[in-house]
Image (cartoon, rainbow, N blue to C red; front, side, top):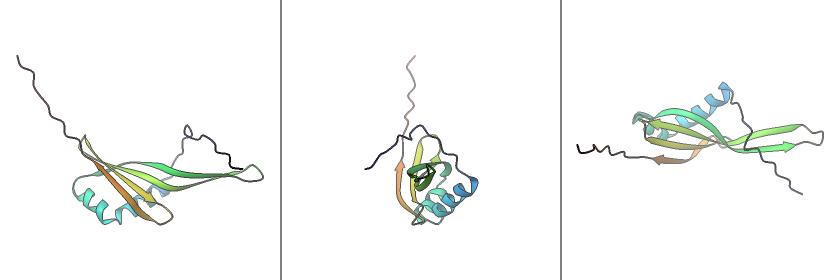
Length: 107
């Protein structure tokens, strides 16, 4: 029997060591290096795939397998970097560029 809980409201606090591990993995990726050289900056880290196991004695273990690292450039450009922690590699990069056209009103 499989019972799944709803942990969407649970907030995980990431240790500085965990964050540094994620950043180290990302920095080793050539495409991420290119984004950083283009002016992108690390913005935040979010856990994406979390596995929770309740043991027979009621103790819960939580393992984070994948994280989403967000890079930002200017106010409109974002790069979403998916990192597989077990494989210690970047598995996907999604780049979103938004163009804003400011238009003045006629007087």
